[in-house]
Image (cartoon, rainbow, N blue to C red; front, top):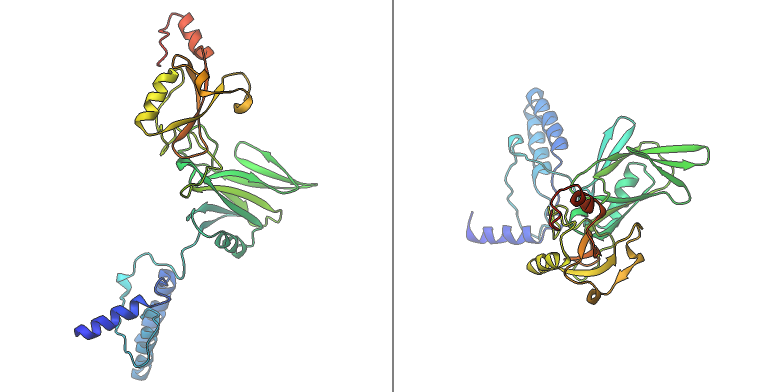
Length: 312
């Protein structure tokens, strides 16, 4: 190939509007099988048609300039790797009996692609992606059904619609620490009730988290650490080393409401104890639930004769 022809070929490939299109390996394999089978039995005239057909299938779709010729390599069956036809799917669907397993493949996909994927399977499902901290990216973090009651069971969700109900199975996933999340859901093939699910996606620059995960979970700022009953001063020092901050302090109580007793940072001395660490709503931040005393369980250990030092 001359230098001029190389330059022309390169320029054409760069301008190819369908350069992302790849051949589905299953379709390609079946087509090649038919072609090879037919060619073995057809006369010479048919072989010419086979050669032309192979050329049409295997040449990349390219925008041809007037008067320009394009040379393309022939693809042999053994050379074909994992390929797809058209843009990659945003969701992964797997038929499992009377259910379809749904998992996220591309957390950053355009929401229209999610709707198209579900519609292609006849499912009335709305999927929303919310900015989330690292351990929740690609994980399912919420389920609901507008105007209907959703009952949570150990292994599934039940959508109650009058006298009827539909059950959606959970696909368990790991890596979320103490935050609830799933890898996906298994939806009945005949589901007609509207169903909404929220998956986490990576936050864009300057974006706050809509869903903050466990800061000690995989990929988070305090991954793998157990900070209960450490002093506030020790935790502050660790966070400084990791270029992280405490966004909010709350007084520990028996209430499950984190925001019930907020505390100004100036009123939280280094000698207080951390009862719980939660994720903040901005990257590299945490929220601390604190108290002047260690947790009740730790005090009980001290009373039973065990070491009562603040660090476990």
